[in-house]
Image (cartoon, rainbow, N blue to C red; front, top):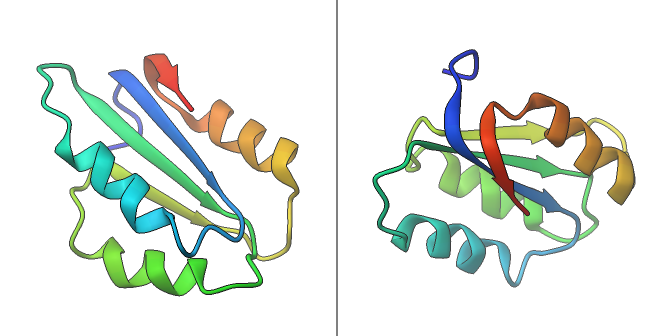
Length: 94
């Protein structure tokens, strides 16, 4: 799915967002649009339960959601940059 271009890429860089990540993903799912989109989520070795929250949600999300679980902490800038170079949208939202 990631090799096909889409209209909008939504980038969600995650580090210690356990309390808010479900709400952020739910807000994406609530949007109504005719545009094609993808959601790229980079979990950056959070020290809270962000990764566990994402993993519990992952199988229930559409195939347009792509998860990247970092093996070591990239830091905010590198995490974003990695997601940015992976995106396929003509436009992007952070």
